[in-house]
Length: 422
Image 1: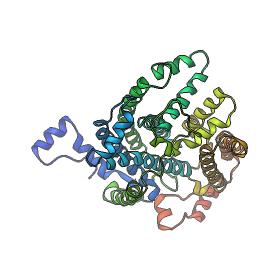
Image 2 (image 1 turned 45 degrees about the vertical axis):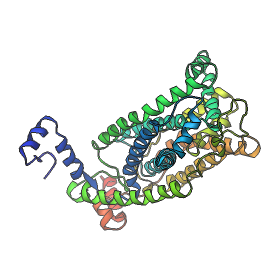
Image 3 (image 1 turned 180 degrees about the vertical axis):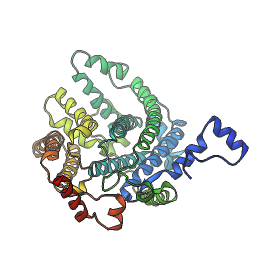
Image 4 (image 1 turned 90 degrees about the horizontal axis):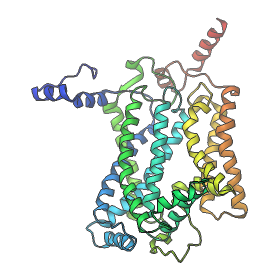
């Protein structure tokens, strides 16, 4: 039975569904045809939804006890940790949840890069995802400021000062962001308000992201379209639900390890010292998930060009569907692209490490080389590969690749030879 044939059995259910078809929607989600060859890299969508809900619930709880005032913010966090029942647990879940959220989103993004999930007809899904990613970074930065420790205060000072590089209006924007002439109480109040608001914007975009996904359907590891829904797909429930549930359980075990055994390992020691405008930390760094872009920012000697490079490094992802000129989606059938893909992964990891190091000497040189390669990958290598790369023939259907254990290359080659002979 398809979702269009579904009708509630009870009179109340029929009455409600005729006026608000939520029951039909729920049936669509359970019966949604999903490619049968999805692997565990496709489970991170559900994991990300779990992370977002966790952040919202714990954030709302923390907001009930937090005081957004420069004189009391640091002590209110200590009050949450020491005096609120299970406040330490809620705060550690929220703080480490941000890191887990970004870990899952980076895996989600790099999976899409490997399997070509950004390609037609899924460009809008990809662009909405990049907008969600930008909002995540904004929310995470503002959340990092709220404890009002040394790294919170000086991180806010450094990052907001970047807007002063904008010609003509830069200084005015910085003053507006600060609510005065330095990072102080008005800044903290504004950041708290936006940090509270942005997750709900993200939640709305996630719904839109999932809605957009259900129009063309899921991509899959071989990157080919569904030929016969009855043979190439399985219902979302119970097959994908069980797989997503198992992956979520494994993820929660890792999450729990950080919360209960190493809750502060991903934080910075200076942020456990109350903010002092008179004492500058020796080395100001953001959270680990922002380090690659921080390295790009510092690798450019000019302030304005550094800001442009940092923003471009993020926004270039939004135009990726048009930069990658290859007609083949999955890297499984693109041997040359696969090599450059792993070089890009290594490059981003190097940028992350350089972002945590002082911007001097060999560290700065490596950061500049890594930054140059990052842009070279997207602006030069990807467009050229699409025209020059010799790809491996893809299977004729998802079912063929699943039953054969590997793509039926002989059949695909014969099919290609037949097409050429015509």
